[in-house]
Image 1 (cartoon, rainbow, N blue to C red):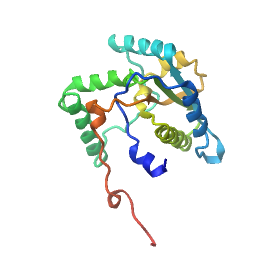
Image 2: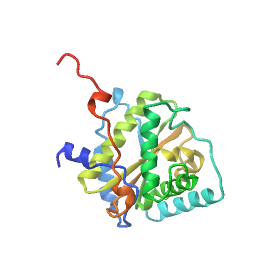
Image 3: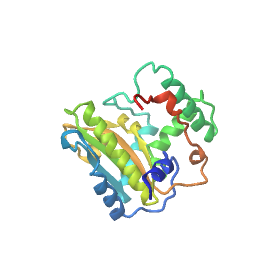
Image 4: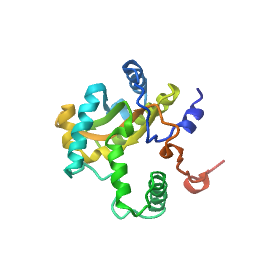
Length: 222
């Protein structure tokens, strides 16, 4: 598969079929993704793949806390406070599309709760991934982990598998740390759902917009 085809096909899938993904396939994707670049070849990522009963038990713990209204302090802010345009506009347009796909208006709090609950169920995917790194590392290494995640997603497409990156898991640092037995010095950067998309689900018929190159880039000296 051409890389350009994989890039075009990749999307954040938010509804999965229950069909299992082989552990060997998951391991192969994660192993191949380790060729992702990192400054100084630090390879700062630490990845955990959950499936089967382990994933089911983890989701049960989160579901119980979510129903009881238990919250935890995130280790970082996914978005800056008082987000400004054009970033705020792009995010609001995307939220409106997702809420509408599941029958809510953008100002309906139930839509936010519904999507959060779906997130914490890995959208029904049979594989849940967590990407962690040593908290003593800095923003450049966070970027490295992001490149590693992108490489995972594109390699998954090559295998006919879909994904959804999920920074929302930053909301549960204590629970994830306990369940993964994560070393004290490590932090949870993001999670990811992995599996086979449900092509008929309304959330998967939504493709987020991208700005034209002229808005986000410039060509100089050509």
